[in-house]
Length: 93
Image 1: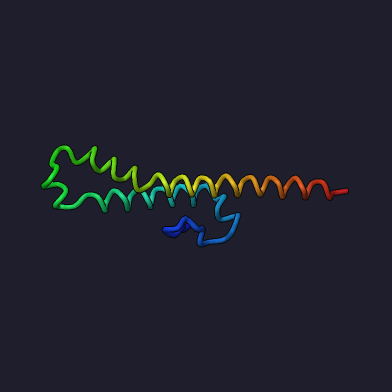
Image 2: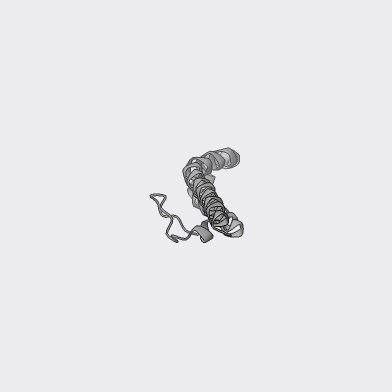
């Protein structure tokens, strides 16, 4: 699953949003990218042993909005599937 910078789902499929494995991989990909982007030679020279907490804070700041958006998409898609399933079960004879 890919979510652009504005938080819009670029897949457009409810099934894709509710794929737990894909959601976990997306979260891990975003986390890895954020961590690697924060660890630079300059950052290591500037912060030394204090780099860990600084990177953790920067990664958290970058990821919280994305993770909130992804989890909301997941929640809404699950709700929609449940609603659709309930409506479908009512139409059975």
